[in-house]
Image (cartoon, rainbow, N blue to C red; front, side, top):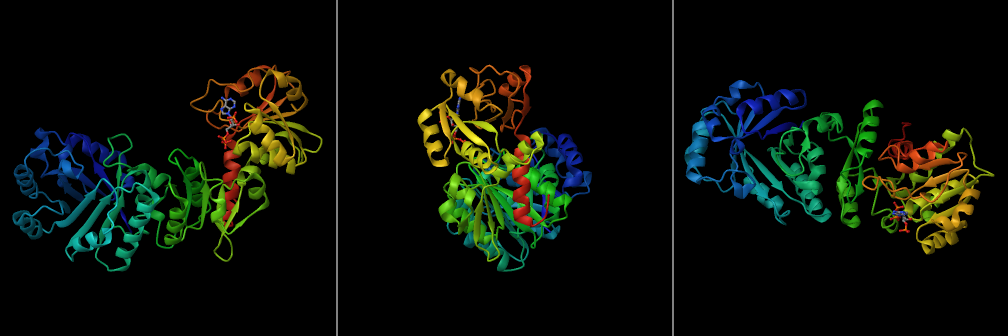
Length: 485
Ligand code: ATR
């Protein structure tokens, strides 16, 4: 089982001990970053391991390896020698540090050496060879590299899997930054001896660290094993997504051995190779890949073909990639529940916007029998959509007030006008509600958009976008796991 190691980044020993207390239940060991301590704390370093019952890694990272030690190398090794009097479990020595005295002292006191290698500029082509050269029966090789692309993440994962297969000697191999994030969650699957994490309130130990609480509360790190199924979300950006919270919570509640991990992606073909390496079972697909993914999958359903957007890929019974669009179901289900009806025959509905979300909305509404009109700021784009999906299109301004009223039994707002950080924009500012309209804004952040507030003031019933987010995720959940959320 990969260990969870909390990196201690405070300026004082007392603060570091407090950070341990705050995270105690979520961690297995700590790394004392002495290079971040105030100098007046140095005299207390050797006794630090006696102040906690967790194993401690002693580290004094020089600035060329991403640390804060700026002093002379002689002083650094001198301090390390003194501090090794303490009952540390491990000491981190950079791969270029050659000091027989330190090595001798370390070995005679039973402290395990971690030989570390850092690359803050990418993932070297020969990563596997570098790691292999650092490995030894009494040495844990450690590599911390900074993937800048999906291709480099693939290289890192590939090297991890090869290392894992090539012997029983432990190693640590982790990716920094947002591209590297999945390797921190999947440490156990990738064979890494441990994963590093930070306290959520303290300065991060390295770029892309997950907090100790997120590792356990969102990703259930300790439940991840070799057998755990990996599902993912791909996008760019992807960090802000709420989907990991929803899916991972569901796995926990339904006792499903799976983990859902965000993959920042800049190349779909490289992600598909990563998905094969990790046998990823299903993935949510978000901006900007919903169209680009279509040629890369083996089959697409009617919704994907019609909308031209795919937000979900999953393996069919033969292990090939199938694509669907759960946004359509996610959008319509809360609306029908809200209206307490099962279809929209005879309803005249307007859709605000003509982007990808609008296309999903028009398709979903039509499937349920609604007559739809699109209102878009750029009329030509609205007309284009209307021609393809066989509906009407109007400009999103005062000139269309009459038409909007005609299609106002439900107004579905799909643009990002009103979404954080554009909270002050109301795309229907020109339109006087008469109170009979149902206004459905698919934005979920903020929970109540300016449009919804204005509609409510006029007596309208309103529905926000959070239920849509949940419903489309629940359907994905069913497709990925075969289990009802
Ligand atoms: P998505 O795929 O999320 O729907 P998109 O394809 O970029 O995103 O489409 C964004 C939609 O929001 C478009 O309909 C856009 O109108 P234009 O076609 O005129 O660009 C609409 N939109 C964005 N900002 C808007 C604003 N401030 N007021 C009104 N409509 C806006």
